[in-house]
Length: 107
Image 1: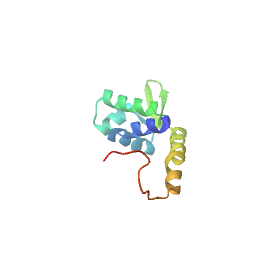
Image 2: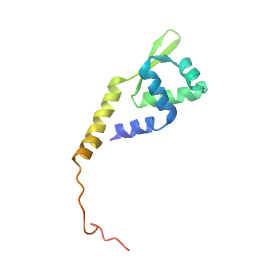
Image 3: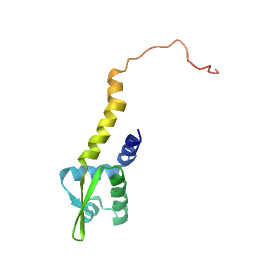
């Protein structure tokens, strides 16, 4: 469950979704992300850090450059958890009418 919470926190912000969509096309360095997003270096670094903490993004050093890419296994772990916690239960869900609440509710 904690995995899903981290996933939704990371993906619950528009800039981070944009970063993921850009990285799905190609590996990028921080300066390319800054240029595309039109944000400061500190703002982009903060978003990338959150994505890394959620295991959604990998980093790779090449000399003085750091390149970022999608962490496929991290995404697959989150998707598997989502399948088990939400998708399967929703597929099996059946609506049942109840005559009254289980608790002693006050009117």
